[in-house]
Image (tube, rainbow, N blue to C red; front, top):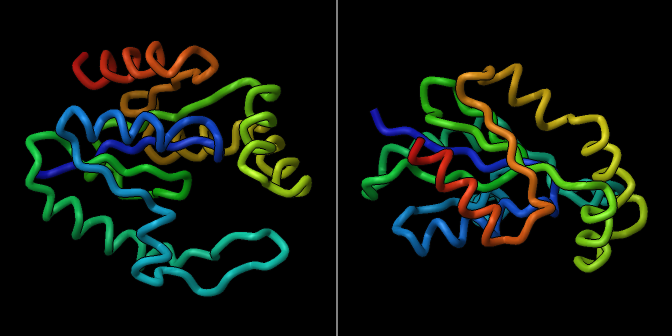
Length: 164
């Protein structure tokens, strides 16, 4: 059975940067944010939160199809913070974390509003994504990687998880 490798974490923790590096190594990656917009897998755009309200069933259907269609010899990389696939479709789930200081700086550089920065920093402090992923996939599938190190060091750690 074909599977997916989920790269997840609060926005700004480095998911897409690492996914792009994995693509250079022969992996195929899907960015959830881009997929949701491209395929219109959302119910509406929440102006206050500046984000799409995703149709989880439609997203899971689209991701399942992409996993099946993956022709790479590697698991399909799912890059995003809203992936909640059934555990039987997931080989590993890497949760990216970083210090609040670094996260805040990254989000400021992205031009996020103060309220969106505060919301994401609070989610990181409360370990929202980590907790969700542990409940979904458990300690056997979930790994945590700190992205406070250099991109190169982070990438080496991710590769060791994938090959270990």
